[in-house]
Length: 281
Image 1 (tube, rainbow, N blue to C red):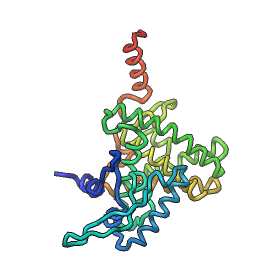
Image 2 (spheres, one colour):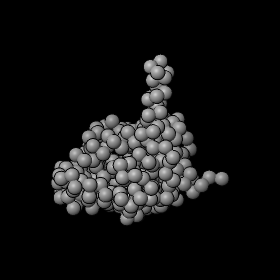
Image 3 (cartoon, one colour):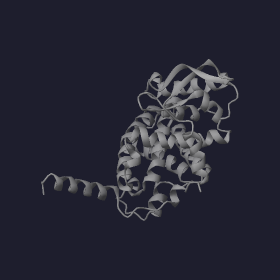
Image 4 (cartoon, one colour):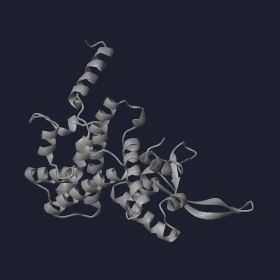
């Protein structure tokens, strides 16, 4: 029997198509119905906002939103041509993020597309990786995106190292129900020199990757100014991620188990294995 979470995910998987290049695509008309929008003109407003967010994030909207005409059945074997938009997974993600979050299905879609987009577009072949490989892959993504987040925070006015530490802590507090870096560190029973991100499983890391990427997007998109405002924005993003985990019936990040091996231990094992295979040891 499928869980509630699996059933909700299947709603969006059921309207997924494959184009002539073998790429996953969704049609805006079908997504409109799934998300509960009765009028096409109202939904195109959401798509327009999503395209703007795409451009502000440094991506070309034309790479993810392809306007097209499509023939649809209207009964008795007849068809007519309608305006539609072929959308990538990233385009769907941006569209639902700009949708009416008061709609339960929109809130579900926000988490579904966010998680799947980050897994499948940022980490090639994610589904084929084992748990340790997933942890290393996501951890590397976080390293890169934390650089972009730091840059966005700096532009917002977070300049000094102490201010950036406060800014990062706010993001964790939002995601972890009020727990900051010190509290998370203590719950994981880590030494002072150990980094909490190196002691997270793939699920917990994925939540933090989503937090980091969305915090960056929010800071840039809304042109947030001031270190306090930047910290508040980071907290809001973390809290939003936490709320969507709740909506999907997931486990809160602070309740997830701490893996026995750290990321550094796994990376050392990978290096040793590579050296052995190349006859260097």
